[in-house]
Image 1 (cartoon, rainbow, N blue to C red):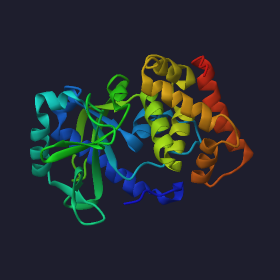
Image 2: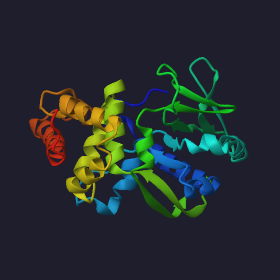
Image 3: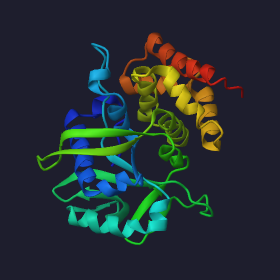
Image 4: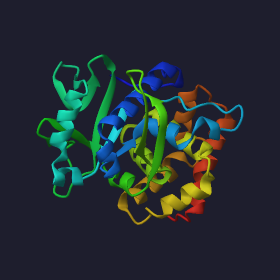
Length: 283
């Protein structure tokens, strides 16, 4: 299913369902979260990094997301936990989603009782996997190959879900791991370069603007990843695509928000420029 291209296409109801699915999955894979083999990535991350209470008065909430993205650590392969995962997914009431041709998608699962709510499984590229290969096939489970995803396991933050509702009306308290702001910006920049989606540019801008610890903290977390080739590539993308009012990044944020004012364009560009200056990037 194609994702909405503008903020108006995202609804509070869909985002709430995705968050409830996340809480439900946390009850089924608590041991894998504890073992740091699972981390939440994708469009749900900003709402965990930036709680509603952290937003200044009058600031808009993040628009949310339409699906749950879960990163799998490479050690899932070593421990063969993927077999356990597929079994638990089925027992938890999930099944394969289907593609446009009606064929099952081993990397994307959906709730039988709420088929519009889906999970995508992602995994870092393992050594020796051809660049052309886009899926890790794990018997009856698969994961989308995402370059740079290993950084989400280096820069991650614990989040406590306290009395969080699940899709079945239960309340649960669980700790999960969520991609940290440094790795998130790297992954969003890489995603934007690959597919150019307005939502990726918006997610990046939103975290830069509203993260409660500010640009200094984000820069320090990026600095810890600076030697990684994925980080270097991402920072070059930010410089080339976001550092100017006429650049594709600010313009796609503006298109997503239906606000092409010079004020917004300038704000997006200046946030990215300020981040790169703090990192002392010289390309």
